Length: 329
Ligand code: NDP
Image 1 (tube, rainbow, N blue to C red):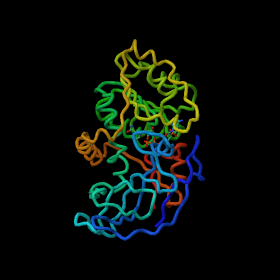
Image 2: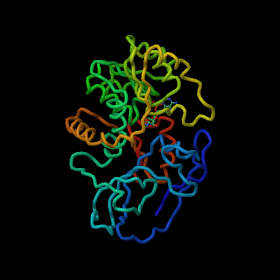
Image 3: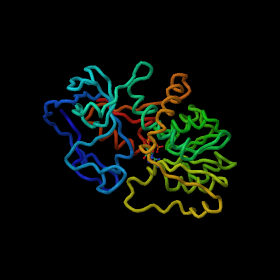
Image 4: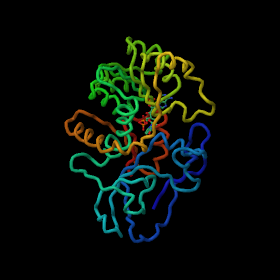
């Protein structure tokens, strides 16, 4: 079998040398285990944090060991009465072509209505993150103006659409290129801007001249500062991610206007999606219906080949993806 190992810990931006493709001999299956041939794996921004040797909400990746992360694949051998050869499952042993793992760490997927990859995107942690952030953390109300950063990515594109479906009066998105801005308009965002086109504060003021009620933050830094400036009294921020800072070697200065949160009586609330599993059933019911009715659209960017998984991850950090970045094995 082939696996991608972490060869060294990156400082600042990761590079191909931080990864190594390794051939390994698989152990024979033990009772209760399955062998899965992975078909598609996910690369996600949180993996950057796990490459650092620091204590966090998920333990760091180990050097000279396979990375892991969400993947879907087909069971090709089973020593468990609960899984059959041919089952399509989702699990967390990505970054390898073949995975040996306990059957209990796999979940059998219903692919009758949606392709298996949807469980790595809108029906997976990505979609749940968007849902939890908007519905539980912010939470947004009908008639409000919502601003989403990283809006053409996996979480952001779903967050903007959920905001619309839940009755937002105006949804504004930011992204990193003119074609992504066009994409956002096509998705139903009322306004969108490229954050390279001058200060975020100025672009946001044009896109939401009346201000905003909710900010779904995927980026941090100057985006968060601009949002704090634009938020109305009692405005709310779902602190989802800060991708603008993940490769920084120095702390970033923004937001410099945090004290405004006092007078405006803002709520800025961080969250980690894995703490909100209790909302998964409600989310799953809503999202399954929205997908079936064609009311949520999702896009995927595929990179082919396990050996190119590091490139897919590096590309994700640079914005090479529209929607969910996935690796086809
Ligand atoms: P995306 O699909 O959004 O991919 C990352 C995107 O970030 C890129 O496409 C790029 O798009 C954008 N980006 C990169 N650098 C910058 C920058 N300096 N400024 C602004 N945008 C930048 O990834 P996900 O949807 O998986 O994740 C989105 C965010 O959600 C991340 O911050 C992630 O850490 C967070 N997250 C949080 C979770 C939680 O539980 N709290 C769970 C899952 C994700 P562009 O071309 O627009 O720059």
